[in-house]
Every structure is written in structure tokens, then in C-alpha cells.
Amino acid sequence: MTVDRQVVAVDVGGTGIKAALVGRDLTATHAVRVPTRRIDGSVDVTQIAELVGLLAEKAAGGVGGVGVAVPGIVDDATGVVVTAVNLGWANLDLRSQLAERTGLPLLVRHDVRAGGLAEFTVGAAAGAANALFVPIGTGIAAAARIDGHLLSAGGYLGEIGHVVVDTDGALCTCGQRGCLETIAAAPAVARRYRDRGGESVRDAAEVVERVALGDPIAIAVWDEACGALADALVTAVTLFGSELVVIGGGLAEAGDTLVRPVRSLLLRRLTFHRRPRVVRASLGQDAGRVGAAILGWEAADG
Image 1 (cartoon, rainbow, N blue to C red):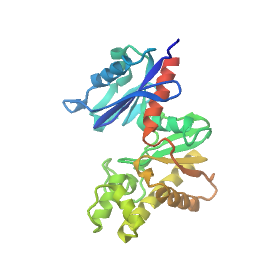
Image 2 (image 1 turned 90 degrees about the horizontal axis):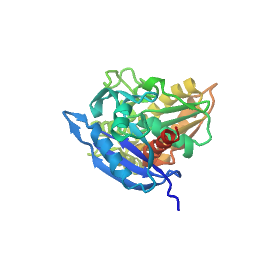
Image 3 (image 1 turned 135 degrees about the horizontal axis):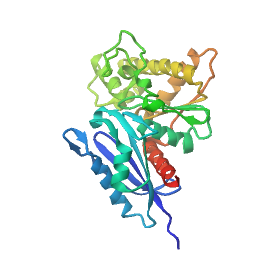
Image 4 (image 1 turned 135 degrees about the vertical axis):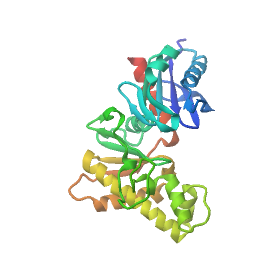
């Protein structure tokens, strides 16, 4: 009996690294998650190579390729991480370093574009030629598919979280004021609720719970977050002509509490534009892993 090859999918984060051995059907057969190891403040590239090797040992049919998803400004074409502040990397040729260490064909992509690749290929946007994938979590970014092509612009495309939606707003970590992330990212939602005198909350999920209970402060903060998202999406739809907007990330766990008002506000703001469908992502927290697996198969198939 012939044993099929597999690929290794790796999703690198500032606090943890997820890796999986994945078949052609994109189903994971083995998975590991480990705390991110740092050397002098920078994530250790060797640890990623070690995880690939660990999983390769479990692949009876061998490993054909590797896909790696990382945050930051990532040049998808070259695999160079231009900057990834939370990983401590700058101008790191990650693709070459990992290929040398593992001896395997390998592709590197920004984590949101990897998640977008998954949603555009087998998820909520499968079959859509013009779509946006917008995961909302600790930060907010976007992956854009236009005329069937996933765009990158050398790694700089998709930073929708830094579209200014309030010129007099809070100072963002990027140095601008009133970026979308200062209003609608998960930490901002929790912070704004507390700053307005709301009860102590751990995260945005607890604010969502209070919205359902009719808490007026929670409702006001949530309405502003949804409005800011709609404002930024108007800009994105105007530029990209999207026919479908897929909302993902941790905040999308709120379901219709998020998707329904954002959809309504966005459509209300549009005039001559294409009027996109707005839906929740279907792959959830697996989007990055599935996208990395698709990259692994692209690398394996040459």
C-alpha cells in the first residue's frame, strides 16, 4: 500500500507556535503547540525548524513541503519578513533560513493572507473572485482577492486596522491617531468599556455578553466599534470593488451581534459601489493553519 506524502503547516505567534502535519485533503493528522522561544528578545528560527523536523518524523509517506504563516510586514514573494515587532524580527530572510535548516521546499506568508488564502480557497469566500477577509482580534488586518488574485504589494497591503476613522481619536501604537484598531480591535473594545465606567472585564467577549444583557455602556462601545468597522470597510470596498466581505478572528465569535450591524451600516453608507455580502468566516481559528497547509502543498508541487 502506498502511503501518501504530507506537508507541515506552521503558524507563528508572539507567545506560541502551532504546527501540524497535514494531508492533501487539508486535514491535520498530528498537531503540536509550544510556547515561543526567544533569544535576546527575538523569536528563535531554529525552534520552527525543530518543529518541522519533529512532525516530519511522524510522516510515514514523507513530507513534501512546508508552509509558514507569520505576523508583521511579510514579502510573500521572497519570504522575507520586513518587520515583525512582536517577534523581534527585521529584514529576516525567513524562507531561506528555514529551507536551509529543513531541506524542504517552503513558502512563507503573512498570517492574515494565509488565513485569507484558506477562506478564499475552501472557506466562506470559495469561488468569489473579489473578496476581503478581515480578521478582528488583537489587531485588525485584511487579505484582498481581486479578479481571482491574492494581492500582497510586497507585504504592505491590507493594513486596514490603520485606516484613520477618527482624526481626533486615541493615539495608536503606529503613531497615528484614531486608527480603526483604537476603536474596534478586541483590546480596544474592552479598554473603552472600562474607561467609560463599565464593570471590570477581562476581554471583548465579556463586553459582548453585556451587550446581550442590555448594558448601555457596552452597547455604546459596541455600536461605535461596528460603526468604525463599517467606515473602514467603505474605504476598502471603494478601492477593491469587493463582492464579499468575510469577517473572522476572535471577535467574529460574537456572530450576528457583530456581523449583522456591520453589514447594515456598511450597506447604508454605500452609494454607487458594488454592494457586497458580509458573512462570518467559516474556518474560525483554523484559518491560519489551513492557509499554511495550502502553501505547503504549493511548495511541494513546485
